[in-house]
Length: 130
Image 1 (tube, one colour):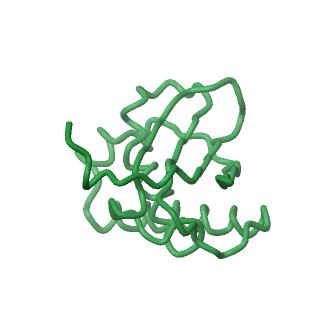
Image 2 (spheres, helix red, strand yellow):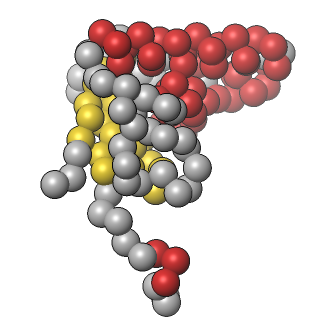
């Protein structure tokens, strides 16, 4: 049986969360502080949702859905990276390709950021001929 974890982060991205703004205007130290704050928010959300600290044993697919916030979808990239880093050791073992196979971002009509982590079927990708 495949497993699924779903949780919601109470955060509304603004233009200051834009990948364009973060990479072009922020000092690297400020970017690190921002990423740390998002990682901590993710960890606190996992605790609040009572999601056990037990990483999936098989590779996962992660989907992040954002409220319609005025940013282009790809401008959420830095935020998504920080959320995924916050899940390492908790929901996912690591974000290396052995554990993390697929990633999707989308908009939806909700008010909170929805994060879904789903176990994917283990396939012998290394042995496949395309």
